[in-house]
Structures are given as C-alpha cells and as structure tokens.
Length: 106
Ligand SMILES: [Zn+2]
Image 1: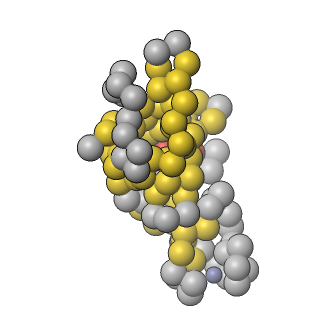
Image 2: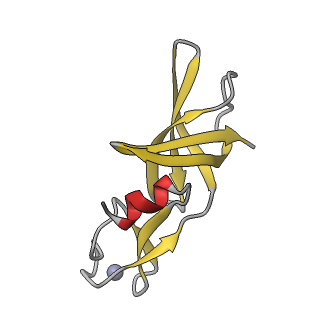
Image 3: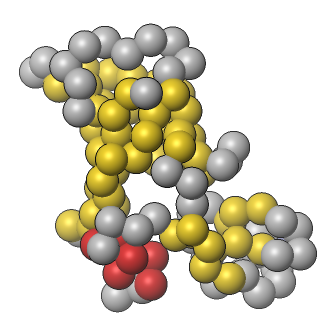
C-alpha cells in the first residue's frame, strides 16, 4: 500500500512533487523524472480540465488533466455530453485495485 493509494481511499488526491523543478511527477514516483531528486507528497487541486470524453451505455467517461500534466481516466456524473474544454471538479476519488476518479462539470 502506497501513500498515494492510501490517500485516494480517503478521497484525497496527492501526487509526488519535485520542489526543485516545481512540478508534479506523474505517474507517482519516489524520485523526480527530470532531475532524479527527492520528491514530496503534495495535494493536487480538485480542479481539472476535460481532455477527452467517451460514452458507453449512456454513461460518460473522460480523460481529465490536473495541474497541467496529471492525466487520469475517470467517470462523469452528468448524463449530458460535456462541452469542449469543459472545466471539471473532482467530486470523489478512491482506490479499488486501480485509482478511481469521479468528476462533475462546473
Ligand atoms: Zn526535479
């Protein structure tokens, strides 16, 4: 069990962050993917941007981007097709064998 998974279960999205390069290291890692330096765990903003959307059985799935470089796969609460460049809010996150993200449109 990693801290990342642990925090996700508590509806808290944290990601590894390099204080030297000042960017989030995604996928999460023990060291920075640019300078190989140590990273800290940092809270990720709940605001995200819709990158891609798909639908299946009247449910909407999306790829959302946080902080400019953290892209995750998630589900959308609304049953309406989202707009292009839609702003999203992370409604809920969790972990069940893989990270789970649920978004709603803003
Ligand atoms: Zn770095």
